[in-house]
Amino acid sequence: GAGVSQTPSNKVTEKGKYVELRCDPISGHTALYWYRQSLGQGPEFLIYFQGTGAADDSGLPNDRFFAVRPEGSVSTLKIQRTERGDSAVYLCASSLTGEGASFFGSGTRLTVV
Amino acid sequence: DAKTTQPPSMDCAEGRAANLPCNHSTISGNEYVYWYRQIHSQGPQYIIHGLKNNETNEMASLIITEDRKSSTLILPHATLRDTAVYYCIVRVGSGGGADGLTFGKGTHLIIQP
Image (cartoon, rainbow over all chains, first blue to last red; front, side, top):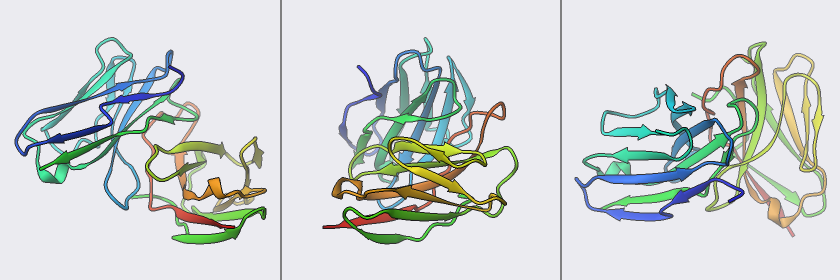
């Protein structure tokens, strides 16, 4: 597709469960970012990939959060032992090189009950 | 923390120019000014960015003061579809890195019919 695609668009999970959120970036974009947005707040940076490697994971809140991008394209954000406080919209963005404009997906709304 | 200050909300009449201010008094020499907007329930959308010269594209104009401590985003003929939260972000640019975007709370622009 032409834009950044995120699946699923909505995910409801029980506290303590494991979830995976997927991001398909724009074809050819080497940079990929994950953000988290809580209600009424601006997006919060989580992690940045350049190619296959995580160039900056300083925004990950704790070790329950992990992300991979094994082939330098699709990325998966993984959350273990989910907590109610993890409920948020998780946004993915990609950029051609990392500089300049980032293009965002519509996000995955995660609800932990 | 965001390095920018924006008014929390603004109104503008449809068809008029919307001028959104942003203060970034601690901006560094290698930092660019970026503007994104977020329409309800969508991911952020890139609008424009600049270093020190004024910039214009099909969406908006960006006016940066000579001392670079503030800027104004101008939507020349606002429509109802421009109602959104507008984020002003400073970010290291060319060659400096491709770090994640640090969003503040932005300005909620409401276009009145």
